[in-house]
Image 1 (tube, chains in turn green, purple):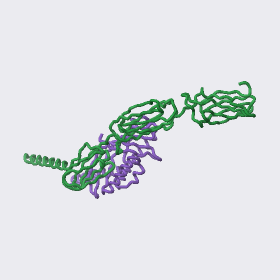
Image 2: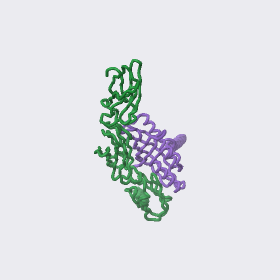
Image 3: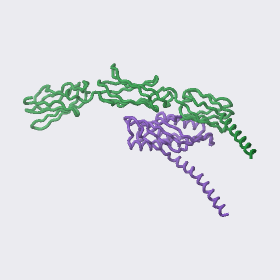
Image 4: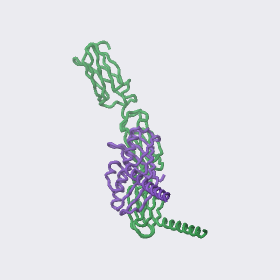
Length: 287
Length: 174
């Protein structure tokens, strides 16, 4: 019985030693980084395949080491090293390099001024070989209009993505939205436009009379932050008198909207732009 | 004598079941990977039910496409389900496989997927996937590597014409 146990023990030790020796024939470092050279030690001779997420490298080798250049090892992730006919293979991991590229999505491209949390920025962090950098990375988001100092926020990416939301400034214009990680910056432009006209700035008056027509025009129309409402915005004039109702849709041109309405003995004119209602005017009789 | 016959019969049945069950599993794994998607951790926006269903469907299709493309060295399944960096990388992988004379057989045992990011405007979603995958690499029809492992993947999907497409697919040791 003792002899049998001894034989079994010897057999197990030999098996373990042989297994270790076989495993040692293919040695791949476990700290590989995309874009950096890699040395693989391999015994015997044959064909070595390195199978990565987005590439396959094949090398004929004779006992010793196989050198993989940095520019060849582009993909981060799970790799397999396998020797054809040698019954040897091993899984190894390649980490992404330093952040070298940002995919930056800024939404929306056009936004009214003075609105809370209306602009969103999302940045995906990649290394120079388009591998997503999963490690937390600080990303700075900066939003500014013209020379004015804007808002700046640093967010640490989580699983390769960092995001922020920001309010629009009170001044209209092209806002520069910049995301920066490491030495890489990406710029997007968010056009901040005037909001709806301000009720107190939507005022109209009689600008003139010719024959049986009355010309009505507004004061310069601005939003509540003082930004001129863009040309082309529709302003509606409605005249009501004993004969009925006349409606004129006019576009703002150089900050002012103008309409010609039929002269009447006694009429009431109202003005509106979108959901904003302006002043009321009585023409023909007493104002 | 009768007892011996019954024993032999039971052994035979056990053998057939033990061989047949994994075979059936593989057949089903090859046809449609199982994807379980959880969306409760998605930020900064909640994932709508319709979106969840669509992501589950399209992520499943993407993995089926990977299996088909790598097993047969064909690009068509990839073009239908991938875009951006993920498409570039997988296309290169298939081209390299073809050039080097290898194929990869993926036996997909399922994915536990967690949505971790869903953009404010609903145009992009990031998933963390714990996939149970068996991989066999064949060179000249002979298996040169075989392993079964749980692998973590990070996937970014974006809305395309009629479906969600995988734009980034990255495996990670963590």
